[in-house]
Each structure stands twice: as structure tokens, then as C-alpha cells.
Length: 159
Image (cartoon, rainbow, N blue to C red):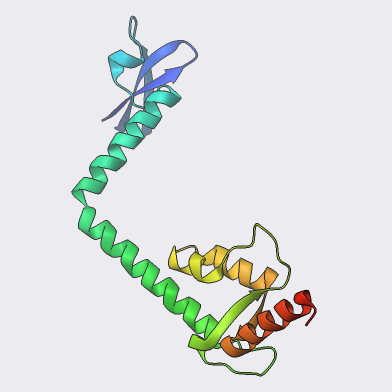
């Protein structure tokens, strides 16, 4: 027998399902004089639902802290490896150098909302890093990147 308390148009109702040999038989019984607090349903209102979920997640985290931290560490490590593999397929657009450690992402258009790709990767925001690199950046090796900024600075100074 499965007994649940549910909210209906007429008020709080005890809903119990009894399986018979001919199939499922469902019966409803009106409960008078009860409220959400009486039946202790955590999802009766949104505020109570949020409070209940917050407490539940907190208890779950405390109970499974090692497992959760290990899962997060493993997922970040896998994502970092995938990012390195993707970066290893790229090469400098000026000289063709393709070593992963020497490649930089240069923002073509300078804007205040440009995000540094390496900061995004370091903070675990890999999806945002892929998007930023693909939409707003060109790939330059470290030497070409430094030379590019040197040339921009010289052009601005008029030397």
C-alpha cells in the first residue's frame, strides 16, 4: 500500500493506492482540519521548499564530502586535459608554431568585457573559455604575441 498526502481543489487529501488482482484501485479520502504544516510536506510552498532543499543539500554534502570533492577534482582534471588536447590542435596564425605551452589567445577587438582565457580555464569555466577563444581571439605563439603588442605600442607612440 502506497500512502501519500496530496493537495487537491477540495483541500488536503490522503491518496492511497491498493493493488488488487484485477489492477490498480485508487481511493481518495478527505482529511478535514489539516494544513501543510500538519502533514509536514516540504514542498507545500516555495519558501519552505527552498529551505528544505538547502538543508538537504547541506546534509548530503556533509555526509558525502570526500566523494563530492573527488568527483569535482576528477571532472576538472578531465576538462583541463580536454582543453589541452583542443589547444594542441591549434597553431600560431603568424609563424605556425604549435607547442601547447607557447600558444596565447589574443583578443582582436579590445573591450572591457573581454575575459582572459587562461583565467577561465583556471577557474573551471571551460565552456566559457572555448566560446571566448573561438569568437573573440586569434592564436599567437608567445613570441609573435609579444611582438604584436610591441608593434601596437610603437604605432600608438608614432615611433
